[in-house]
Amino acid sequence: MIYLDNAATTQMSPGVLEAVTNAMREDYGNPGTLYDIGKRANDLISHAREQVADCIGARKDQIIFTSGGSESNATVIFGVAGWMKDNEKDTVVVSAIEHESVLKSAEAMCMKHGFHLHILSVDGAGHINPAELQEVLHTKNVGLVSIMYVNNEIGSMQHDMRKISNLCHNNGALLHTDCVQALGSVHIDVAEMQCDFLSMSAHKIHGPKGVGGLYVSDLVRYLRAIDPIVYGGNNQEFGLRGGTENVPGIVGFGEACLEVDDSDVMFNRMVYNLLYPFVDSLKKAANKNGISDKLIVNGVFETWKIVRVTIRDVDNEALAMLLNKRGICVGIGSACNSRIVEASHVLKAIGVSKDDAMSTIRISFSKYNSTEEVETAANEIVSCSALLLGMSSVNTGS
Image 1 (spheres, rainbow, N blue to C red):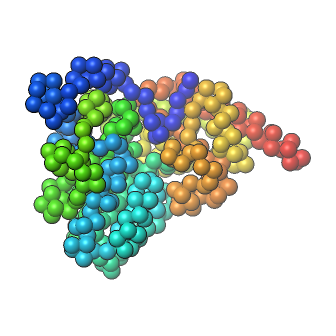
Image 2: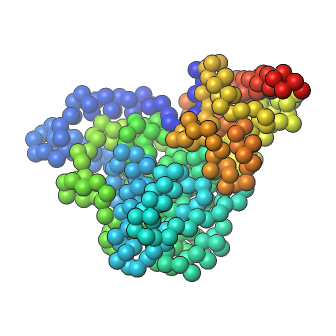
Image 3: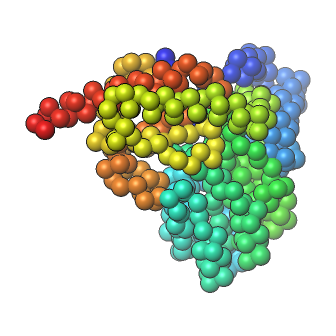
């Protein structure tokens, strides 16, 4: 099998698998108890918290563990509602290409509390216009702005997060960034970004599913700007997330963060070993099979992880299913929506037509892929596309 849907999830690394297994087998005590096995579990959480914090340039007391990226996003959006009301703020701002867990949470929170939701437009590369954000901040009572760092479908990256942060803070708004896809693929430093909240997920970086993290800045604590959405023990996750901690998952998350390679080294290795060979093989195969006029490869490679491939007049679901039969796994959009047959809201937002969106697949790499794998996959993508185009011609009589 050639697995090229690493933006959806990743396989656990051997080190993570060993760490999780050991924690499940040997340190199964409740971390809130006083006996030794519980204390050991609590120590493991503390160590993992430090590992996650180090990965983003934070302190360990700024990290809250959650069940994943979606919960981290929801915790921020629903958690700031009380602070917004107390400070007479009535507007939440998000970009048009946010993950559904941000968009739907923001819609629900605004509807519940009578707030306004402003959705920022993006250009063809998936970037917001800071001038539009500045205008909204100047004319509305904005409490929260949520802008993802790296998009999960097209790989676009917001390079000016510090500028966005300054705009927010100068106008009394808090900044949240969804870094679920960014973690492990680009450099993250919360001190440089100056964000107030940052969401993470373990299973995107070869960690276990069911565990994520949320960075909460000192400013947020000082302002008392967030309330928990899951209540429980006051000592659990600094009072911001109730429930017995998922010790094995948290341990695995910490180990996965420890294994994250230097972002610059990783970028160069993946670009030259995976991204360029894949795109080159794809174009050569398309030329050889006479379908180069159908092929579109997204041209803005801001991260090494995600490539968007469109083969016009080829149904992306049919292509993905045929590739699966040949042992190749690709995505057709966000994994949370990949079973829904409709055009991606992200592709719509960047100006891709509905027809092209329905002919687009997502390729996403990991450190466990090889040059040989991506070259094979590129040839199979073209071969399957040519087959489907031929079948379409026969069916339409053209």
